Amino acid sequence: MCPLARRSFLIGGLGLVGAGAGLLGTAGDAAAVTSPEIIDCAGWGARPNSDVVPVRSQRPVKIIVHHTATPNTKNLSRGAADNLARGIQNFHMDKRGWIDTGQHFTISRGGFVLEGRHRSLEALRTGKRQVEGAHCSGQNLVAVGIENEGTYTTGAPPGRQWDRLRQLCAYICEQYGIGATEIYGHRDFKDTACPGDSLYGMLPRLRGEVAGALGQAASSSALQLASWPLLRIADRGPTVLAAQHLLRAAGERDVVADGQFGRSTADAVRRLQTAHSTEEVNGMLGGESWPLLVSVADQAGDADVASAVQALNAGRPLSRSLRGPADWQQLLDPNTPR
Image 1 (tube, rainbow, N blue to C red):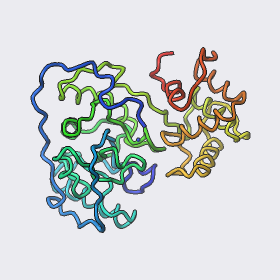
Image 2 (image 1 turned 180 degrees about the horizontal axis):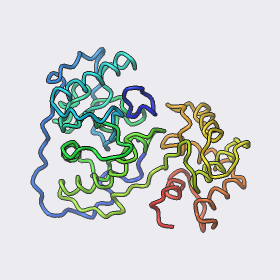
Image 3 (image 1 turned 60 degrees about the horizontal axis):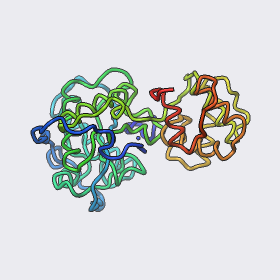
Image 4 (image 1 turned 45 degrees about the vertical axis):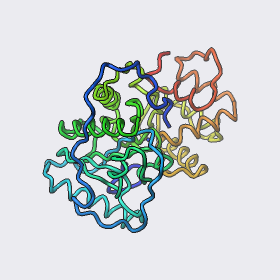
């Protein structure tokens, strides 16, 4: 969860690969994955939840990684971890009006793993139930949310925090039968920078390490999932140019297609977000607004759509027609072979 998304203290992403898809098979019989030590809500002094925490008789199918967007503290103690968990819960309950902490688990920079929302640890231990969270709307019934203390716009998480993240993800995957390729970032689903450019860029590595812990082998293409690009003020290049053409096709005729994401482009994105009642109206073009934009532009079908394709395809038209957001996502992803 990221403050650019919807919080000033703590904030924070649909996938195209099914659970376990892209795995090439097992790499031999690995030892059973063990759970990291997890401090339960009572252990860090949680307040009681203000209402009944919904527990569903279903398994989640993915994991969503967040960062807290709080300072990268050098205090790696257990006390600091407990204070972090209490601060998050207070913010979510007192400022957001939620019944409890939004995410299921939190990992401090010191590598302490804490239960977030009450009963999350209980549900995980069963491997059959899911606590409904509040970490990413639209995904709270199907995804386990993990907050990582810190801001990872640049720089990597400390080694102990990374180790616990890998261990926790592997344990969650084993308990619920989730494939290692089903680990996402918050920005995959929302218009947010969360979990930070650096940590988001490390997710293919995380998927690979989790696959290894589970005794699975995965191709590099399976670990590098297609993603929606995140565009913000001051970005530039062909993806921005394509977005501007799509905004024009969607009715924003005053947008100048110059490849520079300035205030006027951000304002056009805000109008799109307002018109479609997205969770955030922040002018950032990310995982929630891209599918809306390409769908609206496709319906218009004017010359600007063709110009958007050419901007992304090195000036060449496509040899086939685009069929919905999934095809657009593949075209927009810089990792997709041209």
